[in-house]
Image (tube, rainbow, N blue to C red; front, top):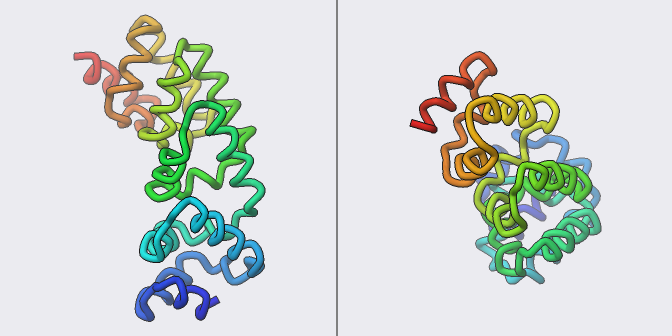
Length: 183
């Protein structure tokens, strides 16, 4: 594992810190991490970009390649081109920890609010924080608060252009944050 990280170009002083943050990576089968390494190379990642990805999300390399390819294929069908998928993997490799079914469920729910496919592509590309939240425990309650104060079109506009502070506020603080965004 240490030699594998070193071959990626990660410095000797960074390896202990990274492994300390992700001790379960020691249990990752070599064929799994090599499969993800190959996938990144096929996307056109440089050695430096691969090392940066490992520093951001070492557990990205613990995902089965088939799981990532299924999500990437679905993202492609949704409208993300290869360069957008590559950019997403470089900027937010942790997004690929999600299974396609989980992302699809959130996308269907967002479409119910009137989000279009291009808007959803934008959210996936630029606002991945939305997809890290629990649908039932976070998104639905916060969207319900929004619905009490704005029209569906305004809700879509705020989500598309607004700050994401309303996603992380406590439910008690959310109405105040929403009012700030609408002001």
